[in-house]
Image 1: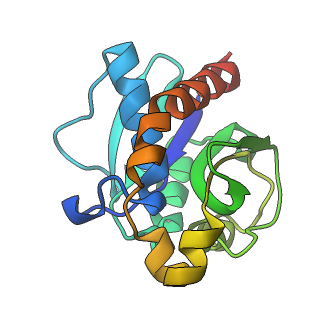
Image 2: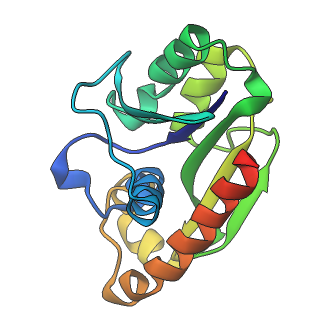
Length: 173
């Protein structure tokens, strides 16, 4: 069994913000696979169980995502190496995708929360670049990650989300 985690914030006001990139990736993936989320949250997350995988969107805020991840990993006895966390990364160029099988949180508070809850950083993570240095300098980091994508960035999202969905398929194979 594999656990696929998309990071984001649960309220609608955060839809299409940089910090909700993990949620966007999973929602796109679900549309392309005609999958759906269960109506009732479980263990602190929206979830769906498919053949060999569980998909979750933690419903605690981004910085507390580790609670739901650890709950699902324990409940379903998912090995650490079979957990894939999808998150934004403002230090990566917009649209760049990077898969690592372990690593440091690098300032990402969602990953820090997961590291703490799992007591390790040796789980795979798929980072989606949301970088826009000019905008980030104007806003500061907190406002930047909670900002909506620009119209130009929104036009590129389908290609980025498709590439990320392909990486999920590779991870599941």
